[in-house]
Amino acid sequence: MKAILVGIWNRDVSRESARESIKELEDLVEAVGGESLGYILQNRSRPDARFYVGAGRAEELRDISRGTGADTIVFDDPLTPSQIRNLEKLTGKTVLDRTDLVIEIFRRRAKSREAKLQVELARLVHELPRLYGRGKVLSRLGGGVGTRGPGEQEAELRRRSIRHRIYRIRRELEEIKRMRRHQRRRREEEGVVRVAIVGYTNAGKSTLLKALTGRETFTANMPFATLDTKTSARPVGGGLRLLFTDTVGFIRKLPPELIESFKATLEEVTTADILLHVVDVSDDRWLDLIHTVKDILRELSAADKPVIYVLNKVDRIVSSEEEIDHLPHLAFVEGRGVIVSARRRWGLENLLEELRKLAEEDVLGASVGRAST
Ligand SMILES: Nc1nc2c(ncn2[C@@H]2O[C@H](COP(=O)(O)OP(=O)(O)OP(=O)(O)O)[C@@H](O)[C@H]2O)c(=O)[nH]1
Ligand SMILES: [Mg+2]
Image (spheres, rainbow, N blue to C red):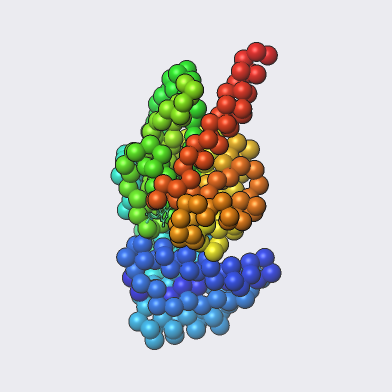
């Protein structure tokens, strides 16, 4: 895939943040084995209904993609089915949006049955609306205007089989959710405090899990290395046992289809007692990314949980663990926070100390309070 990328900026989305978003889109293109040839940013208050960018810009896109030998045009926001059709017709190239890429990456990374089902569900839900309208185009070739030609019948059959498959996947995922709930209840009875590791993709969540518990998981410098949740326990003294769960990373403009589909996995987040919000402080955008993650947590109704900010990858900023104490970063986050390097194992004792305090005060304290009322 050789791709031209397209985004818009306006009063709500600054040019700079649109540019950053495009940079991230470049990473997503690379993650599916593609190459980005360049990008176009247009200043528009809102997307054009027909082409997302203006008609003039759309023609320019056609010329640029021909001139550069691009075979694909990727838009940074979700496109409507008719925008895709119009753009593909005008440019003669494959037209994708950010959601297509994210779903494709998820598809490639999914290992467990659960993850595979969740990705398939997201893909079908994403595709279904695109199948509407296509039939109409085809039927104009088959029958007269207004009649249902063979194209429309074919499209209707395809839609029906997709809807049926969606129904069956949802049912199977419900079953998986029930099993997970059952497991969780057992752990609760054992008096375990459940800690979910959340954060932007590539922040170092899996590396932190490994540093804390020794649990080996796949880590890599790429978006969405982890799709399957991994859970691992660690005693931290005082009879307290913490159960850590690594989760799928968040990203800007995370497609709602994926949030919806990954509810079973993300339930580990929504039912956790404590969240560790891992942040890559070596990334210039780290404060912005904290907000993105918080927004998604809010969507999951998990924004009110006790949280510790784990400002990670500090080994890229300072050269020894002692220097951590002189860094100003903690002043920028509200509430509890620690600075660590999961890779070098710096600051882990501090983190465990914070966890112990929070578990004893907030979680166990609260449940004793609840039990006595
Ligand atoms: N320098 C440095 N690199 C780190 C640190 N922690 C993680 N990394 C690197 O950052 C990259 C991403 O780490 P992961 O642990 O896979 O990140 P993740 O948050 O689990 O990512 P996803 O599962 O893709 O969402 C890997 O290349 C890690 O080796 C750290 O403390 N310092
Ligand atoms: Mg991971």
